Structure formats: C-alpha cells, structure tokens
Length: 75
Image (cartoon, rainbow, N blue to C red; front, side):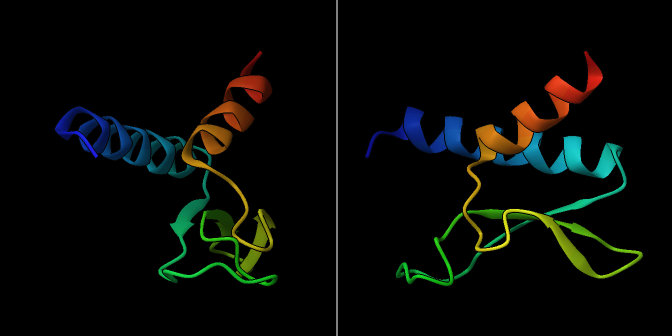
C-alpha cells in the first residue's frame, strides 16, 4: 500500500465525517478487522438524537458512498 493511497483514504474519511456532521449525523466506521454477514467493515450513518442507524445498517457504506449521499441530496 502506497503512502499516497493511505493519505487519500484518510482525506476521504475526514470528508465523509465532515459531510455527515454538517447534516446532523455521525459517520461511524466499523472497527472490526474481519468481515461478517452482519458487519461489512465500512461506514454507517447514525442519527445521534435517536441513536439509530439511518444508512448502512451493516456498515456497508464506503467513505465515497457517504459523500455521494449528501451530494445527491444537495442537488
């Protein structure tokens, strides 16, 4: 894995979390290292007021998916 790839991944991670926060949600990344049917190792969007997962129930979203959800909603 190259240094550029890690930097790009961190930038996407930060952008996804910032976009979610701007819309009142939390983008949480799964901490599991191994994938399972219940946890795909990606992101879930959580509504902090209700403490429920709004998107990505099985942590199946990528950082780019989180960014794309909000870009589509803003159009």
